[in-house]
Amino acid sequence: MEKRSESSTFTWRVLAEKAKGSRELFGYHALMTTDLSMGLHEVIGVDDDRDVVEKCHEVMKSYVKVRPVRHWVPRRVRAHIYLCILGYFLRQLLKLKMDRGGVEMSVREALMRLRRIKSVTIASGDVVLAKRLTTLDPCQERLLELCGVVPT
Image 1: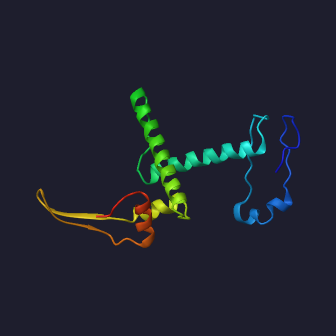
Image 2 (image 1 turned 30 degrees about the horizontal axis):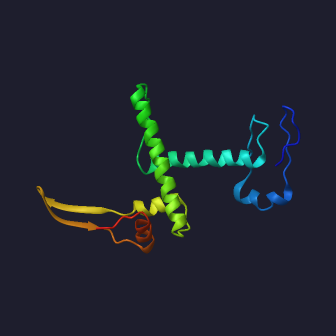
Image 3 (image 1 turned 135 degrees about the vertical axis):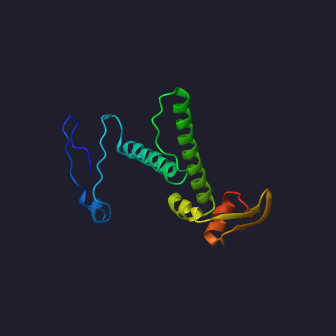
């Protein structure tokens, strides 16, 4: 799509050659902004940033099990924001380690694979009798290695 005018009306047209094949896979995606000084790539960049933040929030809800809570006390609001930022940081750190380590998969897929790892501790009172870890597949081993985690 491209902007056709500077007026307040929304005018668009599909760039057929660029959209060829995409429609069947992805449908249409319209990005709109009120900041007309932004260029096309800036608008797309802002949308990509928003998408990353939404994915981080999804990670926090899905894997870390943080649930929305109505916070009114300032310290709780700060704590909630801190957890969201921490989730974002951890997601981006995993992505960076995967990129540098040559692992070509999404962070979501990596987290789903890591989620399958289970640890069992058998104890009698305060005495630990045995600790066992599920058998790791090569991908899980590589992800743990990239994160500096030694399975025990």
